[in-house]
Length: 82
Image: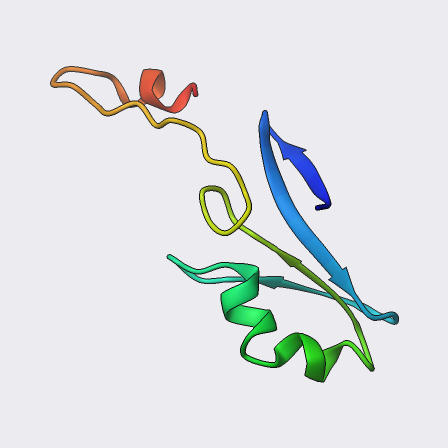
């Protein structure tokens, strides 16, 4: 399973076909499998393009990072520091 590191979170991706690359990013609550493979997009595009599809954080085969919940009075900057 190919993956790359995104700020300490492993992100799963797949590459299909050859040619000029096109990057496919799925919508909310989905995955590369659900949006691009099962719907036939990869099969349709891969004969003419190199399809690079990824799972966003916390979706499909990608990992997620625990998100801290805000508490009253917590500055936004402190919450976004990861």
